[in-house]
Length: 110
Image (cartoon, rainbow, N blue to C red):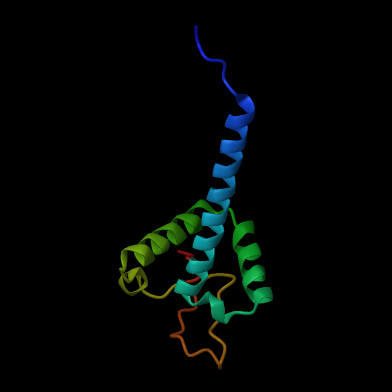
């Protein structure tokens, strides 16, 4: 005879796994913010930028962002190969920003 399945125990295990995955995702997002240099932005600036980006649905722009992100993770410099880009939400770096200015690179507009 088969042993009955303990659904409560399975649910607890799945809940714990989901909690673990969520914590890992949050940690990785924080690491990504630091790795990209976005930790120099205020929390309001970062939130505004992310809200702006999330509202854009243009598949070409999103694909350009995907390629740039893939290049970032592989250590390549995609923006040098494709040249400077411009976009409707591109802005030059602030005067106090010591990072190289790449106006359109953040938008990925083609």
